[in-house]
Amino acid sequence: MAGWEPNSKYGLQRADGTEAGRLVRLEDVAVWLAESLPRDRVVHELFGKLIYEGETDCLYVLSARDFALPLTLGGRANRAAAGFWQHVDFVDHDTLSEFVVREVGNSWDDCWPGLADPATDDDWYIERVIAANRERTRLAALLPDDQVPPPKFASFDTAERRAQLNRLRRLAVPMVKAHALWGWGTVATLAVDAVPASPFPLADWPALVVYRAAKTLNRRGPDFGLGNQVEIAKAELARRTAEGATESAALDAMGRELGSTANEPRKALKRALTADRMRAIKAAIKAPPTYAVTTVRSGKKAA
Image 1: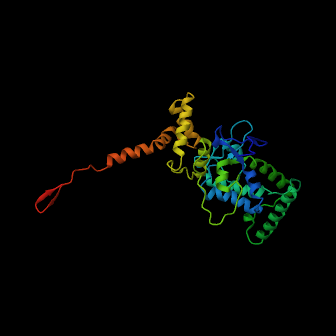
Image 2: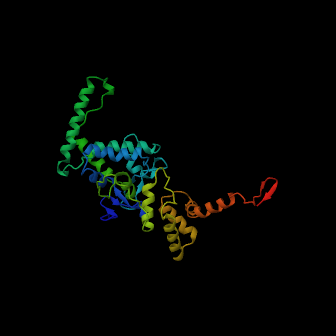
Image 3: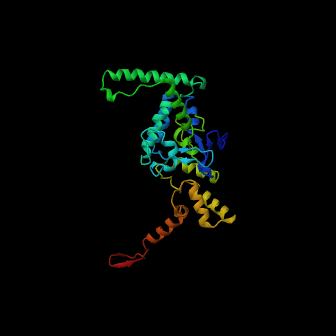
């Protein structure tokens, strides 16, 4: 995408060295959304989409020293990212990814001031403290003492929120997911009764990587037989083997760039690239045999 830079003040915006590994900070997406949505709607749009679209394993924590770490892995909090999630309420190493994202969303709602001027951030936080203490006073008249939340203190709570906000600003998502979930990186246009434009033909291998990542949901990608995907993948395989890679190594690397987490991603990719030939072979095997037909009319045989 135009204007994307791999480095930011919060760390390297990459999950790995591939095209699909490019990341964008979640706050950059939030600021972009805030150009057309109020602050509370932005928070709901960000975390609601991640949860309800089943994309709770696509948040990363940026690092200045290495590739970004997945916040969750295999449906649970990633132990390697404990330095981040240990500061999020109700999260430990065994927490399901959906609840991790939900609690991160709650923390984001508590800390992110939206497009407020940074010089007035403290005022925003203090207003939140006043509102919380007002709600505490209301609850104290209704609930037993042990069910009433503790009071908030402006100076301490503001410092805590600022520290948490700096941690939250290290969160990022793959660029292709930001595009698919929120439209980040596109300019919205209005159309009446418009037919969705076909993405095909795809231009090259990077375009294929972006297309399949954007269309993958719950680890299931689109049919490889659509458009010119097979042709592009075969051409990319031929290019890599011509440069000296073995077919197995090239297919493994290509499978990982397409998002596969299998130990041997080449197997699934090779099946996809040979599916048309295998379907033709199976069709030929299953075709019924042809026989010469002889009809009989009035006791006489007629060919």
